[in-house]
Image (cartoon, rainbow over all chains, first blue to last red):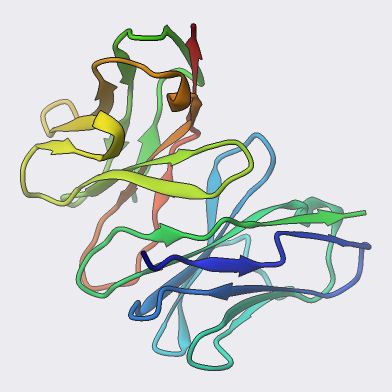
Length: 113
Length: 115
């Protein structure tokens, strides 16, 4: 069964460093999302992406964040200058155009020290 | 705007007992509703979905949920809990439509199953 994959599974970085989190959505899906989950808290929406542009973004998704679909398969989230409060699990999700359920990857745990 | 309230951050049941996890939603338009399960150190797995067809929805692992518009609820049930059901459960809502709107999640309910 097709699934969303994410790399790396765990990333440790120092405050102020740039990180890129990578996702490979399900191949025939058209809509892509990033969410994050701070330890012990609920899953929060960051950004949605369709047709090579951002559809919607939350107030969390400030100028330090960017997304890109550099080729036909990858979908990346970049954090330009990480802060301690960026430490969280980051989930990528995708969905087909015809239905509304989203399929999630296993997540990347980002630890900023 | 959509929102989800999950009553009870932690529910504990005995193995073989009924599981009931509560979810109430707020939506200005007919919603699409979902339950996701998160096992320790794993991602979110779709359990079941309500998309305006049948109000009683069956999902994986014998879970089901009933959409009650009058009560704005979408509670998750399972007749008989199994040890492997121990996990975090999240209710989520989206308005659907033509836009690329995100899921809005509840805070989650941790289910413990006691032998």
